[in-house]
Length: 235
Length: 348
Image (cartoon, rainbow over all chains, first blue to last red; front, side):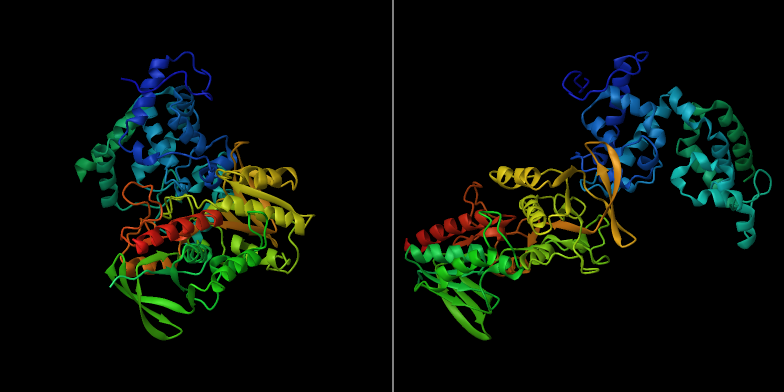
């Protein structure tokens, strides 16, 4: 039995996605709301704005953790759908917002929303993550962090002014502090120990992460599983 | 043997009013005060003007105190502390020490009026830097400056031109554990904003709030007055950080009605610190064995919730902010009721 009411919310968002039925939007909303974590991620909001104030993304994008919390609390199904298809990909998942005096966790709400978006194969999540397939491939296969030279600094203003410098002079930084690095795609990212790598592969599979990748990008999934399974069999 | 004397613990507004009321009803009262002078927190923390009738706080406290000291049926003991208690309603034996001399008192009823203390902003979960930046002060710090007519930036001794108040510091916060509203800070900040504009007519004053809780007549007597006559600006959105920018303070928050993050520079930032039980309230609750609520205030209300001055121990009553955040009027009202309840017990 749906718990939402269509007409009570005075600030209710307009229907910006008429191609999707209200029932479908409501189903996705309820999937978020019924997540086990939801209750302790959103107690209630008195709109103090501390989450927005602490949020790095809010400073650079049209993104507001407060609006996300409010939209969820007001059960504004239309707006939550907008958030589900747009806003959530502007969150850096840094969780600065957890300093909320009500102990809400807007970043955690975004985590749930992202999972729901991907699990349901929303095209917007595929589009949003498309630019990351190389990064995902690298991170998941090599087990290493992203090195700044892999990014286009202009797209990451929230990383701060230093990212440009790091990005362009990564080789100099690595010469200054030598470390075991990966040859090939990039020779400046850290090399991950083989045992750790195999453990990570196991985790990706066991935790359902590979299923999420499959939903997102089938060819990326094929590429990853082929290498990972081979390595795991080798042990 | 039962006693008809009433012991009042604490010589602040609530204790003074409880002592005066009980004495006027014909009771014999012993009033214990920890310090060498009466007047409680308004006196000790140099309160300037009171929100009610804009009265001078020292004058108002002196008036309350003299009604007690001049009353033949009230005996005031200074530098006094309770050391132990036994017995029950109508027949308590209280061990005290006053001025270094131990004494044993037989009393029929006890009124606890040990009050509150201001929240220590060092415990705030937001980054306000009270102990790092001299120009970040509290309501109490500003109250003293206003009283002395000397509002200056502690960092350079000059008059501030832009002043921000941050509301709910230490109140309404699950992270800190103080989920309650401290009731008075909205009114006090607005009152101080008016005083600031009176003393420094060139200054700009902003109040950053979650909800303005100007209950009753504070609405038109203080809130509207601050906005309409004194052009104090109210912004819905609480500050999360106070940073340094040159010789100014940079405050960071969200202007929630405009729905955008904001950064503004200020000369001085005033933290509207809330109320917590005083050390004396915590100690006396333990000593007398009266139940405290989860915040450490003395639990009042009795079984039905409406016996507002009853504690968990029959014969022990509570008045004022020892039972939870209260303004001066509320404290004095509850003190009168505590006196009446204590008197009816010792006369029975």
